[in-house]
Image (cartoon, rainbow, N blue to C red):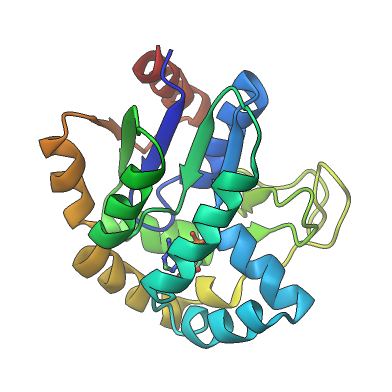
Length: 212
Ligand code: AMP
């Protein structure tokens, strides 16, 4: 069973959804840099203030900041059954830094066409509760009660960077900085590409197969 897993793919490809399912099913720790940064923004820390200036426009937070954050996090974990990296690495420099910390077993790459990504991101609604952070789609994965999180009852919100004007920029940033990671993990013979469209549970079956 593979235990150190990187989730790759553009924003909106389903990394968070599939990562959460893996976390629940396998007891792995899911580390999402996006969630960590949003928490820092909410708490008004120095990191949060800095990160917000990049996140608001869909740009990447500088490598040294993210690498430092992730290193500290990894080193603070004791023995864990596995780690799912969601939204990290996003640049080749970050991938090289991660390789210095641990051995990645598998990079799962979710493949989704651009048109669908834009639709997914702009229809996405998120739970603001730091210990929940569930995500919904207004049409395909709607909450049972409109506007409320099924899991914790919090009021759902639309992330600023899921608004149409920022989504386009995030996809361009992905193409320029993160897409090269597919080559990086292909060269390392660690990549597995999964079509990220269709039924969430059917995609999850493929994810589980790849991890076996
Ligand atoms: P996400 O929730 O993964 O879509 O991340 C939201 C935003 O946080 C991104 O658009 C970036 O501004 C920032 N971010 C998250 N992860 C990283 C990373 N690994 N490197 C740089 N910026 C990141």
